[in-house]
Amino acid sequence: MSDKKNWPLWEVFVRSRQGLHHKHVGSLRAADAQMAIENARDVYTRRSEGVSIWVVESEHISASSPDEQGPLFEPANDKVYRHPTFYTVPDGVEHM
Amino acid sequence: MEENTVEAEKFQAKIDAEIKIEPKDWMPDAYRKTLIRQISQHAHSEIVGMLPEGNWITRAPNLRRKVALLAKVQDEAGHGLYLYSAVETLGADREDTIDDLHTGKAKYSSIFNYPTLTWADIGAIGWLVDGAAIVNQVALQRTSYGPYSRAMIKICKEESFHQRQGYEIMTVLANGTPEQREMAQDALNRWWWPSLMMFGPRDDESPNSQRSIAWKVKRHTNDELRQQFIDMTIPQAEILGLQVPDPDLKWNEARGHYDFGAIDWDEFYHVIKGDGPCNKERVKARKDAKEKGAWVREAATAYAEKRKQRASSMAVGA
Image (tube, rainbow over all chains, first blue to last red; front, top):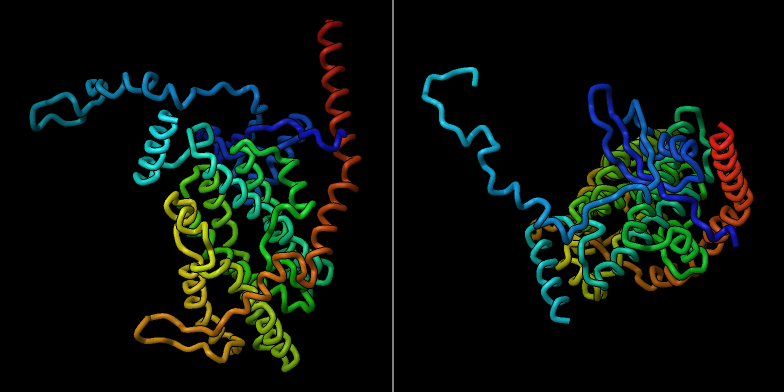
């Protein structure tokens, strides 16, 4: 029965004001992109939370797996030299 | 089996370290099932909760009250949707989840099985029912499952107006004509005990509570939250000059809390099991909405399909 069939799932991203990134706010079901944007307006921006909305079908998102968290992110953990505080500068040096 | 034990230990270690669990992380089956049950019940409560209040939208006494009530009911719809999305992240099918409400397999908060007889009930619901929900939901903002926690944070932010608009209605009625005052008192009389029941059975009657607390799905027990609600609500009733319908209620200096009378748990279980004043009506309204709206969903699907095909045939033509 067609009643049983779910509409596709969409992930919703909202830009809260000009100058900021779009940020993931949640998901919803809609028949197509236009309906997803209209529904996202009502579900996620009832209190002026946004000036722009992106929607993307959830099945089009590729995600890293939690199992890969180690191999994927650990290489950054021992690279303290990527941070400014790793370097010493003489006392009295300013604007650096 | 061995691997599962290692995973289970890693899982509990994360919980203990206040690290949120996210959808694709390993989690025990029982944790997943508990969350699906709890979050879907919560979603159903938001959706069914629209019905008793929706009953008064067309009869709100003035435009200010009407826009507030419309906005509140619309928020409840939104809150239901955030929560259904959170249930889906656990692998539950959305339509199955909704059908479970319609077949009676899933429960919702028993408070919504009481009727809204007068306009004062809208005030009492905002003040007491939303007040109790907020106590519960503020605690749940720190729940261990990421999507549930995020939904709670958003819901709490939006619900603070719900309680204030209810209390404003009560304030006006309590300071109005003798008839209005009586109406406010009558609403408080009818909604007080069911509101206390919203926190669920007593701790010694709530077998899964301890496990939910160990998993940090729940952060406080039912009795702790109920006491917190009573302590904050009594002074609000005093400001209204209304009487809470509990002859045993009194401040206990030694405990630093109000003592209160016995809750009629027979009534609670009676309503939960489906024999409250409005259970059948509520579920029927939801089923009718789904069945009578089926053609709209089918039409939207057909339209989306047609547009997709037209777009692809134009692309071929070009």
